[in-house]
Length: 85
Image (cartoon, rainbow, N blue to C red):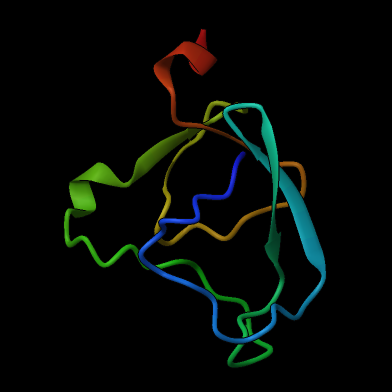
């Protein structure tokens, strides 16, 4: 997955914690086991307030909220409808 240099949010502190590999629509990406501000695990926060839109499918058949689900090693997230076929 290509990094978007025009992204609105930019990380200000280095990422700590063990890398957790997973895929989004088949593209390899990684998350970190801890947030930069603490050593506890945390999920993302989209800032959109459109909670009905944050559902994603996982390759194992689960349907989860992207904003509150902690990533798991080798999790396969499916966003693009073509990737679900």
